[in-house]
Image (cartoon, rainbow, N blue to C red):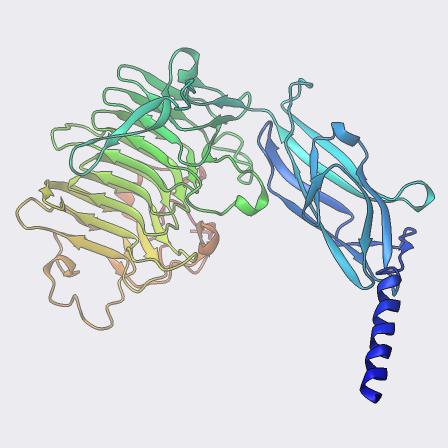
Length: 507
């Protein structure tokens, strides 16, 4: 009998609870709190979606509340998109929020610049929580840039235009989505940025000229290909403001938000096919997969890639990868990369003078060395006619930053003259290796080993040398006379430092 009464009591309590409302809510009445009072969606290109931003809305009160409305001030015409606790829209009504709880509001935008003549403008709106006297606001602000968009043709069957971007190791042609540059598109200017989807090909017999101050942005799996018998001329110049680099040419990804500033592998890279020529001055290449991939052959009688006053860094794989190419490089900085800063592969012919080649990669494990040189690839080999490094720095955050690999069937000629090299062989693994005999005066002249380069901030690819650097005053002055100014236009005579930068220390 007692158990029967107990059951009746439990049923009565359950029925009483089920008959009441689940929760008793009060109006939010302007008592909400927010993680931000203004949400900045950074800079985006017109017609390209922004990254998603998150706003948290807090109910710090002891009462459960109802938010009567969450809306964009510009209503359904707003360029912003909201998602409130998993529901997309631009107007939300009677949103419940428990005591001491919070909800998420996710925010995105895509803005069309066709309604304005400005190349850059601010787009804004307001998220309104409730209305009237109880209204609370969070402001939304986005900087929008107009751009010249270049992309492959789309066909009615759903496919896109394809172009040749080179050959694989077996000699098979490799194709990717892309298009061929022609007419006015063979002259890039600085009036507004370019955004490239797919690979833009400079066809045989043509030349792409890129004016000082141009900004070229690449979507994922995109880049520029310079075909055989074609050329690229990059006419950057020294900038007054080293933060914005107003006169330099910049190649980078098309995501302008702050969180993408140092993300490697956002785009493919610049591909220079065999038989092409390139003259590059004051170019910055960043966040590619392979910054520059240069192909050549040993029949070349003069350099096909002139690289001056240029920085390449934060590549996912290799900053500058040369395959049997002929390169003349002066005042070049090859910084952090996921594998190798400079790879002189399958022989070739190289002169690197007053260059800084330094890899302080910190985004994960790095198996490669800062500088790698070989004269073979799989079953293919070619002569390393010469690889001269003069007045340069080879450094990094690994113990050994130089790899030399010769098949001994082909020529393997190299020389380091007045260079600084990181090579800490604590285990003596290379002590009897002929290629690493640093006493060999035919290959190593005035080599400084394992000294402090004292870079300003190597983790951020800032490779200016500070006043305690062992590179100060160690350059061969006769060689420096041919390149009297450093990458920043600083006179490096009469006492020259190693690398692309002259120290600010009084000589």
